Image 1 (cartoon, rainbow, N blue to C red):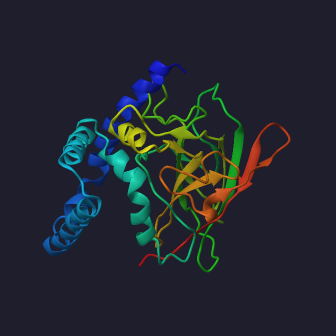
Image 2: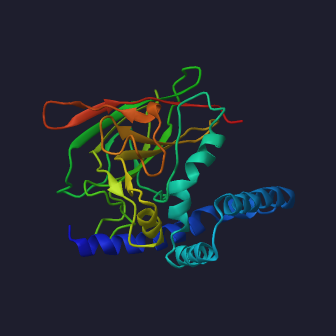
Image 3: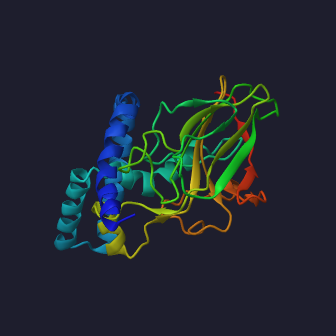
Length: 285
């Protein structure tokens, strides 16, 4: 893939993520800002924390104006969802999942899209006829915390392709490529054929890239499968599954990797790989 295509993808992904957030999260956002006392507490403490950083580090006016310019550019580039999902969301998820008794979860990230095509328990994710990448069979079972199978559990799956690009956030990829909503069987079991995704770097030609360069960080995320797993009467689990030994598993830019979420697929003998991973859902509170 040419550098031009990759740059176009990076430039467009922020705006796409912003539009998707506005479409999918508007109702929840309105509910959150309705609690005046809670908003006052959080906003006051956040602003106070910034004040502390300024005092502790003797921030200069030149640095302050550089920050102001950068904050403006984040909005102009449409990269607030990217910035928050990469550097902030993992702590929100940590708090939200602290009491979870079932499977570990992690961040959703900016590339989830609801409404993916429905698929049966044994299926193949939509993909191009010449889809590049190592074939992967991903299978397992969804149960409750007492071990009971969750019949008809829904597994929404999405992932990057072998070039590290996501459908609907990169040009030239079919709309639902490597995205699907799999319904488990009566025993909560599923078996999905896909390809092993590649590691990818978050967009670096916008404001987030400028921050990464200025701070001397790297922009890479390890290869992973995204899932939202749900069943009636149970809490929805959002997870990312990473690959043992993969690049950047130890230094994920989004700090989202947990040991429980690292899988180790085995060769199948025909050039592909397979892995079994079971999900345990908590009862709804």
